[in-house]
Amino acid sequence: MIRKNTINFNLIRLKKSKRSSLSLFDASMTSFRSYAETCPYCHRKGDCRIHAYYDRFLVDFIGGRPVAHRIRITRVRCSCCRHTHAVLPDPLIPYDHYSLLFILHVLKAYFRRNMSISDICSLFMIDARQIYRWKALYLDHWREWHGLLRSAATEPLHSLAELSHYEPFSHFARVFFRKTGITFMQTHRNPALYGRNTSLPRTAQAPPHNTSVGSFAIPGYDCLTGGKHT
Image 1 (tube, rainbow, N blue to C red):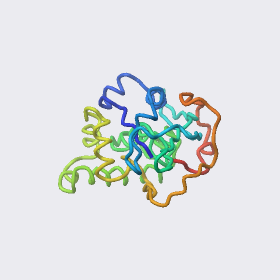
Image 2: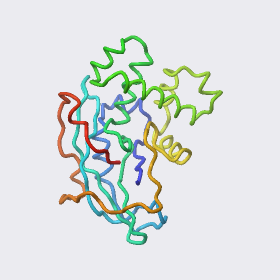
Image 3: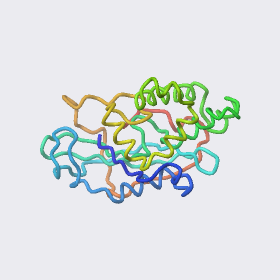
Image 4: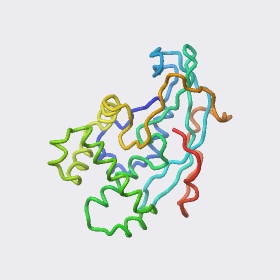
């Protein structure tokens, strides 16, 4: 997996600009050049080439409602070690359909405590168990970042405000990944690189920058079920 840290400003500016996760993803992939990447496995630079594509969902919160985008993920292959890697920009969380911005919207609504759990579930079209999973994961990751003493003294809502003011956010994302080995708010651990099967489930005949496939409002939960890719 190759993480592209492309949110080069804080999340407050991102909110004011009203840019969506999809627009950030498209901008990142439009400027993506595989030959400029360093392979995460063998650390050779300049040997990665676009190998295949696969589709996945990206759920965002736009205009006061959840919206699901079908996007195309680029996968590169290193000609030196032959390993393949999915390219995931900042707005995407590995193994999760929900964007980072969507999850932060949910957590802000929860920590402000001016809405009931049922109202939050209705607004974001998720169930209560998902809210509590994200809450527990957020607090766990915040402890990872700041340490037990600092995190225990910080109200969750204040910690969200602090996170929103990191300038740029991509620096926080990069350092957190290096420190923990996972993306902020990632639930599943990344598979070990050694001994991985580098074959792909399928390939796609598409140009490398045709990233967004379609968007639609979420009528229910069915569109988000199924196998998970990174």
